[in-house]
Image (cartoon, rainbow, N blue to C red; front, side, top):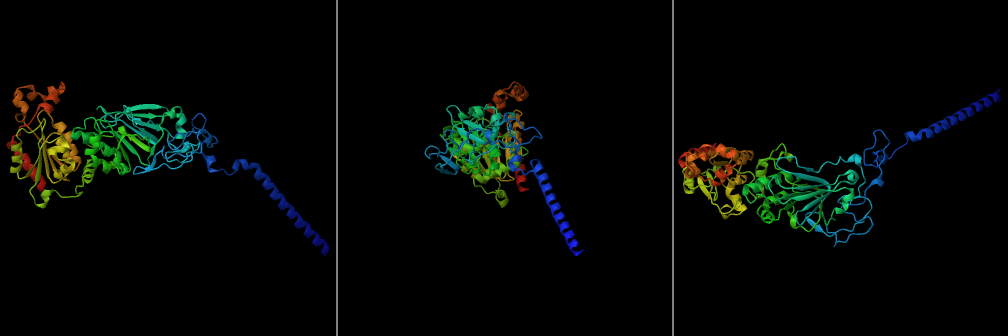
Length: 520
């Protein structure tokens, strides 16, 4: 019986082993039969498929990235596909990694894969790229602007400078070639040298010039011509919108100026402002012999209003107060300083004496009235346009205005010097005859208040206008200014023919009010 028990136990153990083996075998069969459905996938297997027609992959279909659809190398760091694995000659391809340092070209190995402007290979990843949008916007009533991200190249031209844009490799197949002619200033109806912007597609890549200089910072292309011979227009049409367009880059931006008539003197006269906006020397684009490649280019300036900024539309909500403080810093004026009169000194008033139209024909009497009202009067005599009043350069003008509590002048470009005043100072604008109040408010009144500077307007009486002397009290130019606005001749009479014989007795209460404002 004992032997029979041993045999039974042995049989039982062998059956358990056989069952265990059979179970493992059955599980293996099931696993390998369903592995294609539940097997492991690489990350690339999860990317959407790139259809051969350039469209989107069908929803819910299996997806996979296809590198064989990549276009031939066209960006500025690749050579022709026929010349593979060759090095660039420093003498031929002059490259820089940043605008501040110019270095010889580095030896690079070219490939048949597309590269970005830094030379890194790009594999198409449509799922990670936004759809290609129109790069130019002509919808604003004041300005036109083109903005490009990726591979943008600048080149000078005989008639106008050019900017070429090559869309990302994955979008070349569906990109539309387009050409725009852009007036790269904030007042688009004023004639300036235009910039030709071309967005290329797969069939016209050969039109893109080869890069000779590579930049790792953005660029802003803008025209300095037009009406900028006038001091106010230089700020309103270029410097204020240039601040709005480029200040957010924090100095890491290259400025490219165009318009052969005016660029040299403009870059020299306003060099302090340009250097405060950019760490790099401004480029004279029309005379530039390089083909510069950038990852981001803006052609044109975003100008919201005359001599003003709309903070709701500006990066970082920049406003005119920010612009005034920026200009003061550019000219090394004290960033936070009390008005001179707050130190116990007599308030100082700068009287701007225009040399053209809308000038005071009794300037000595005007200056004497300012002094009788309790101000130390400083005369700013005509000696050039705007910023060179009295023969002084911009630095000297900035320091002279900063030392004053009040800026007094007839409506005109000289009041642009408001940008150099300290916070809480006063601009006293003498408004000529002929319903000029809306212009006075729009061009200087509102901007001054937005800068943190107080504004007071003194509207002259008809008898204080030389038009009264010339045409008589019953002439329509005196009795019916609206008629001249309707027929379009208002500028002739009220802007160009008119001068001012200020009635200092009538003017005195306004001066006394300004003095009280400073004492508050």
